[in-house]
Image (tube, rainbow, N blue to C red; front, side, top):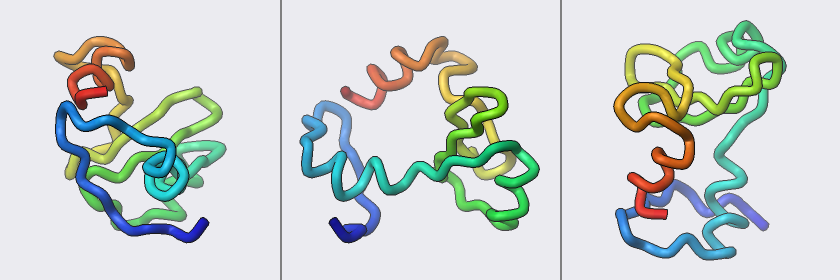
Length: 86
């Protein structure tokens, strides 16, 4: 299935199989290390999400730095998805 472009998810919206096939699963890039991530994405955009395998972390770019998903006030990964409305 072709990339359908960026979709803005609103809290409380049901995440459908179509969303997973056309948007979510095609937006998370996987990198072996942070170095390979930084080489591939020299100018990240706020909101980009990646998975780094050597540290087993889902990370997002907050506009300033790459941050592990689930850190900070949200606590855990499950809390992060809960706040997103999943």
